[in-house]
Image (tube, rainbow, N blue to C red; front, side, top):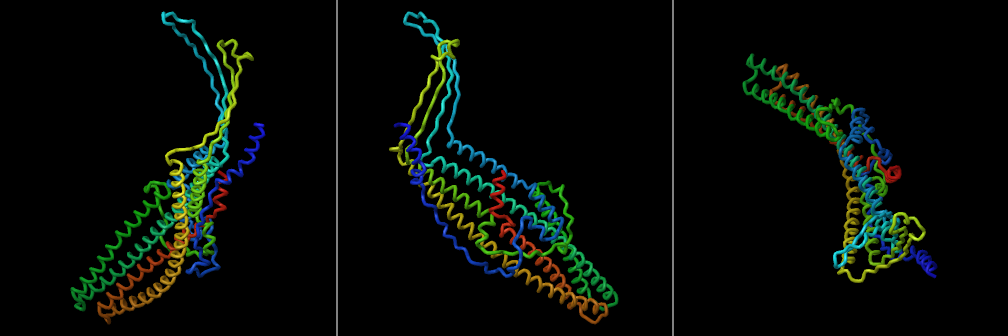
Length: 469
């Protein structure tokens, strides 16, 4: 009857384990039907190598270098290995343990008279096995939690990689924009110097004043002073970029000299519901929530009794020569059951901790989803508004350039006052610099949009990489 009863219990184990399952929490996500700021519905969704859409070979090399050499990504990979190892440690509870032991001992005792007895030897070797029946699914739940945390660590790595490549692209664009601004500042300096020469010539013949000369000298000095801060931006951004690609700043050079070599990509946002499967940080938050739910089930199962089976067998003898004789063999088989009765509230406390942790991660998951929607909306707004701002700024620059060209020509002819020239000159210089800054902001907004949309990442891709590892 005993084997029959045991077989019944084993058959009922899945059903009994189902009694321990706790209900899954409902995220109750507020998913809109469409993005409010989305306009270009025909634009393609981001692809994996999203940086190639800017059509810059150097930017592509830098982004790929960041993917391969970024040290934060290397740290994330090491954490994946730790999580995998921890999952194997936890999963070992589902398998039986088997131990082999061997012993050799010699003993001798003495009576009250101090006479010693003859020494005795004892030799033995045994094999012991132990297996805890996972009736209530505690070990399975703990293993599932560890597996989900290992998945989350992989999604974390993908999040770090997306952040690293986005940061590298942003640094590269700031370097190129600073070089554009520096080139403009030099051209403006040359233009202001030409005007200064004209004023000096007019001063020599008495058609200009010392005040006119001092004002233009101030403009020239201000333009010279704008160049060192731009050099500072370039050098500091190169240092930042070097860290992002895992190199020393002295070993990195950036050749890009103009934003004209970059293309403004068209990026499609898709529908908000699809974003849940396109952001690695959302996938990581969901995996951690699944791990927390499994931990709640494990804490619930801890209230139920544990059933363990043990078996041991081996040989033992007083003489080494008879160790392998049939009479030296022994075995033992047993089963045990332990039911917690009073533990001072420890199990209930652990269960409450896991429930609170699940609630925390549920809210973190909801926050991650809402933040992702907001990231996309902000990026879409920035892309659209900056495109319009760039168009208007180009019109302003064209008008400023025409006004300045006319003013400089009339200054040479002596038919315009210097105040008009100074005003048109200042307006032109500011318009040129403003256009460069707007273009940089537009490129950075495109990078932010790629990052907000997950950079072409998908949950299916993340699962495939997990399976491959």
